[in-house]
Amino acid sequence: MNQEPSPNAKEEKSTLRPTKLGKVAMFVILLLVLYAIVAYHPEVEDEDKLCPRIGSRDVSVPWGSKTIISSTEVLVDFGRLASEPRPTLLTIKLMKDDEDIGTYAFQTNEDGPLILIEGEDVGNLTYIDLADNEKVNVGDRIRITNLSPNTDYVIAMFWAPTGDCMTEMYFTTPPE
Image 1 (cartoon, helix red, strand yellow):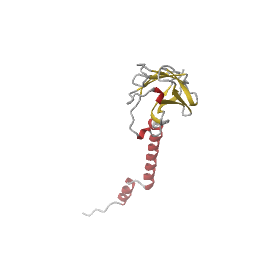
Image 2 (tube, rainbow, N blue to C red; image 1 turned 90 degrees about the vertical axis):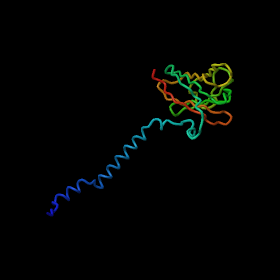
Image 3 (cartoon, rainbow, N blue to C red; image 1 turned 90 degrees about the horizontal axis):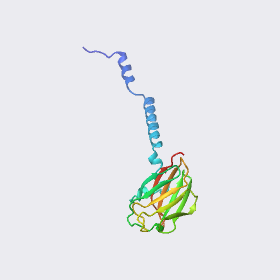
Image 4 (cartoon, rainbow, N blue to C red; image 1 turned 120 degrees about the horizontal axis):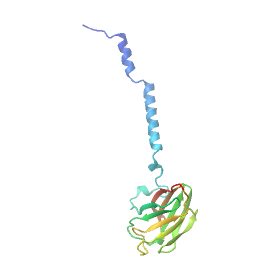
């Protein structure tokens, strides 16, 4: 009982196999899906705007929490800095909407406003030393006022003697 395959069997077999055109189309669709995933990944897009190499170093995370008070005011707390430096050993950069950047310095080691030393005046920064010990430690904060509503900001902390970036944090002010 030798059965010969019907002439349609070969035809059925070839229709079950993906054609070269089908493989190319599947590959292109896969590439488009991967591109869409990578292109719309906000954590990757927004990383390291003021500190481009910070991700490659082991650093403590000196910023603590942020509290958005209003559409024009934000509080940013310091986290634990290993050496608890004097404030005047730090500078702060504030960037608005990926464009305007202001660099601010502490005038003294006590509570008080920071002064703009370079760039654009992006906001008013005031240092609040919770323990009044003239050292930056947990609980100290920066009050940032005169911000623009519905705007993206990046705040970064730099070690003033070397200019090395220590950390940065992102926040968005709400609409009015």
